[in-house]
Length: 263
Ligand SMILES: [Zn+2]
Image (cartoon, rainbow, N blue to C red; front, side, top):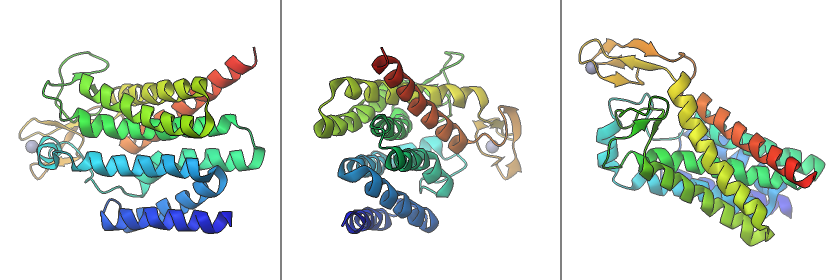
């Protein structure tokens, strides 16, 4: 029975992703598999969190689409459709966490899973909504004004959107589990995880300069010429930064739970 429900719910979610063209075909298959595992081990509440992350990501992507497109067209390597690395970065840690939960029955892992989902949606809302900020963002490391759309940027609007994202996931947890303390941890660790993401993005993510028009970008090509690297490490792209900050937020949540409940 559990298996049938998991397959059914995951199929619904995948169909939505297909209709909305939110994912590339291989990413869609992978997302379906992850959704099955998540629902099978974590139950309906875990599925709802995943579905919320998915829905909010799609909705956020639709708000002022043209304005965003214009702001990032020169800056980002990838398009808006989620590909396999991006699904792995956002959903694999949560999936692994619930497999561990299935094996150990350790209820902390359900809180960690919620935090991982909270961080994932916080990150995508911070980038998709934050870029619409009317004020230019600042770089989290230098605290200087930066080009909208570059990794490592923060804006008040982005931080607020990221907080709301974590809050929504934490609320789903609260409805099913009635635990205010865990609710707070999920909200805080999810939002913090997003700031860690910006911090890592500013610190290590590769940035390039176009030799022709001198724009700072994350693209390796611009104005039909190869861009020159000016900062960061080549293979540390957005997906690597995302999965790292996702895992850090989950570990942080787990450590807080252990520290608090071992007193
Ligand atoms: Zn250029």
